[in-house]
Length: 116
Picture 1 (cartoon, rainbow, N blue to C red):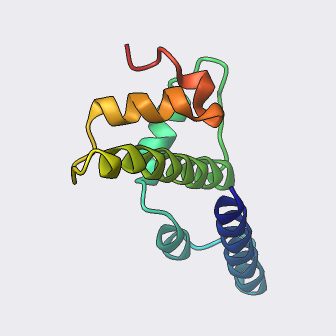
Picture 2 (cartoon, rainbow, N blue to C red; picture 1 turned 60 degrees about the vertical axis):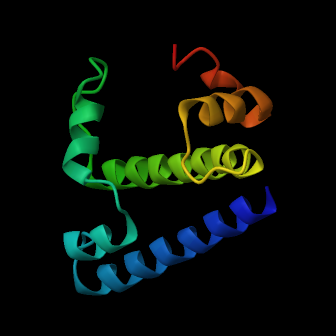
């Protein structure tokens, strides 16, 4: 849990430094700089956001933050699933490992039954 907090603080500092640097040059963070901070495709994240009928417009900053949060969530879930994979002396994460991570980790309680 503390590692996640440290990682989140580190990312927040990176985003703030990029934002400060970009604000010196313009009002918007350059796309090239944003893409270095995230690995998920922004266009795909924006498409998924627009699938929600309640969302009519999403700013580029909101899309960026949602993409970064999704990336952190996927990383946390996969790390937790890998603990079950490694305890079974395997190298490939399987669905049963993800299910075990969801069932045994309180943070992922909201996902119970989502993979069914």
